[in-house]
Image: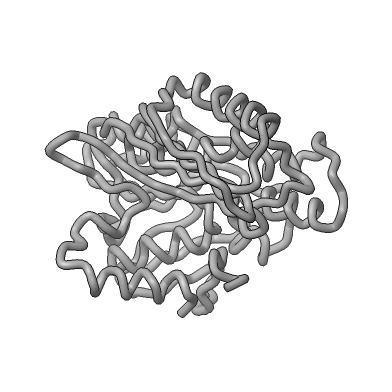
Length: 296
């Protein structure tokens, strides 16, 4: 059990009401509101050696927008807390990047906080309206089809290149890491047009992590094929466990196959009764995910 999993277990056991926990977004049904919060920390999630303030501003918004989209909502507002050894140039360029992404997705920045610190830390709370049907990690069932939208492994490859000293921003893998691609039309179409409960997660902490979390929350297994995964590299470690791609892993009722076909989704597998994750006939029993506490 990694530290994040252990800490989440302690939090769930400590709170008197943990009913809103368990998904990337909390859904406040009485307000039809989805709420999520994400934090990026210098030298854990990014390095200023290869991220400009403008690029960091764009990505900070994107990774939070992804949570609302994969939750079955439409992002509308965000607040942002920014801390670190800040100066006027950094603030201007960071907020220009943030504003660029917010304008693209028609999101309003409605507040936040600024403070000093040793390292740059970006913490965003994002809010959005729920569409027709909200996603949940708890609703997958035996026989559901498992789909994947997006190229997997490219961002992790880009990070490898950046850490090795290659900083060509035109490289397709580095581009995938610096400015991940989201799929708002896919998530909106599913949320508005499915007639059945569904599970949808982004692959920000890795493809296997998303499969694993839905498996555990829904108490089902998954059987999938590696060759069905859309990828530009053939490195199973990066494709399965690399993360930071922000593709969509989607578990749909078989009756929604016409919708999946219309959207061009690739079926990589299906849900099973046996609570095991199997790829190409082999059980994957080693849990791996991005370690947010690797330096602590």
